Image (cartoon, rainbow, N blue to C red; front, side, top):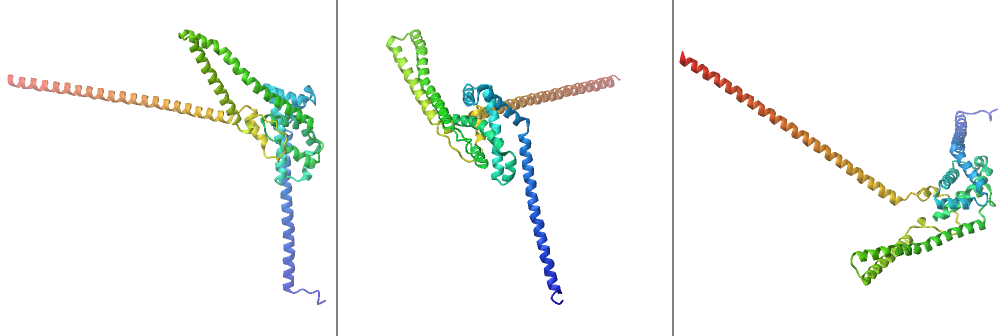
Length: 350
């Protein structure tokens, strides 16, 4: 049994090896448990957000909108409501944006390593992703084509994740949307010269009346009208040049659909689709700051004026008090002097 006996060095080596293996097993299990807890918390947040009243209301609103306008026509009805600026179109647009941002959050968590495919296969799952693609992608495409931006990449992500390649936008739908946007842009271009001609026709009689009132002759009035027409044409050309110089996001575009990775583009449409303009907001904020500064200066000026008046009143009161004190002192000295004079006179009499 000599081969079974262990000396002290071998025993210590065996104990060290077992301790190392046990520590490695414990560390691995703790890391795996931490990842599972983190994934469970993330899934809990996603599920709570998906079950919130806001998300359910967004789904119901879009489904009711589709039932009213039909599965084939609801994207074009949405486009018409956007052009008219009606409240119903804004409500549908908010619901579309909310659902798109929720699925974009799923994509961010998955690409960041916080969620595994096994968890995403259960929730949101292929059925919810398919329902989202069928309902929201046509609305998203119309919205982004209207503002001239690229198609959101979250739809391609869901198609590749759940293998939903057949659930894509049809070429006929894309072509029809492009034609509608092109026709709308052409109508605005043709309406612009017509409006300028109408303005000239309505303004020319007023110019003749002004010319007659000012004692101008016919050639002088025609010369003034010619200068007005040239000024109108130059302003129209300047307006067109300014419109061409605008960035791509500020003009309508009808480029073919492009798909990119989700980069949070849906967060940019608040500025364009809610009617917000960054320059106008900056100018408004600047005007508010100037107005507040002016009010503050006025208030400070009134406070300084009131303080000056108070100081003047205090100085005046001090001067009056000092003058009355001097008068009283002079009266007291005069009375004392009279008393001494009477005493002197009485002494002389005695």
